[in-house]
Image (cartoon, rainbow, N blue to C red):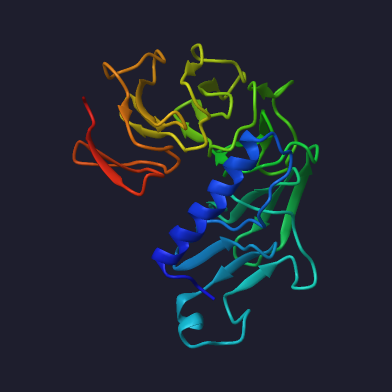
Length: 279
């Protein structure tokens, strides 16, 4: 069943809120069964289900209530199989689809057929909660507290050693230019060079865990924290852009969006805020 936008947002908020509570309590495994937001490319809806499958759906087939999978649709693995829990959305890059699972695996599939191209396995303790990032040569994925660069055609590791944060990374990785940006449950925002896996600048520190995804607008990174603060950071230096962070009434977990000089972001206090991007 395809959920309405309202129902999906409620479901995702409950899932992620539960994840956060377990993380702060020191639990090592995810308490919920997963499920992600969709990616829509060329009229095809790609989504990770709470039943451990990746689905490719067409709106017309679902409107017609055709037996799934109908023409142009697929499911991976077969309905008899099942993957580990998935929380990040699948990423489409050209003909391929990439995603990770909370039991420490990364998969590359043919986006048109659902056929597996390769998979890479990390430790089961290194759960993958966010979506990876991709460029022409590489796939960047956060597993546990480590960030890896993989050859996107083979899955082989490209960096001699992974980049290591102090705690788990549940943020989606954002690639801008030659730098990866992401938050961590260790209260920090990181900027990492894609060629070397080394820090661009000292981590930007907040007073709470960071599970939201960075928003890059020009030379500014916007991100929220569980300390109820929402921050603007200079992408070149890692220094704050605002005199003080904006304060919500609860955690910031949503990824923000920008439109005409305003930043819009949801908060766990049940409100959406519109902020001046410069101040």
